[in-house]
Length: 146
Image (cartoon, rainbow, N blue to C red; front, side, top):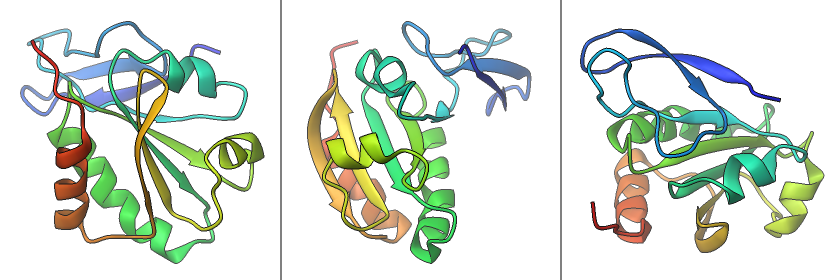
C-alpha cells in the first residue's frame, strides 16, 4: 500500500517523496524544512493513514461533482503548506469510501474533521472562505510542546 507523492520543498525547491504513512513528519531531504503532507485515502487505508498518524489530521470528505468541495480544496492545500509539520491533510472521496462517511456521520459535503490520535477534535460542515478555515483550524489544532 505504501503510496507516496512528490512534493517540492517550499524553502529550497528540492523534490521529495512523501509517503502516505510515516512516523513523525516529512522533511526535505536537502534542507530539513517540514513538507506539506497531503494524502488521498480510501476506506481500507484510513486507519493506517489517519488514526496512526503522529500529527493531527484534517480529513476532507469531498466528491468530484461537489462545487463547494472544489472551491475549498485549494484553500485546504494552501493551509496544509502553511501548517507543514503541524498538520496532515487527508482527502477522502465520499462516493468511493462509504465507511469513512459513516464513521463521521457525513450527511453533506464538504465535511472537514480534525483528529488527533484518532480522536475527533472538531468537525466543520460546508465550505468556508480561506481566512475562516485558517481561523477554525488554528483554534482547534492541538498545541504540542516541541
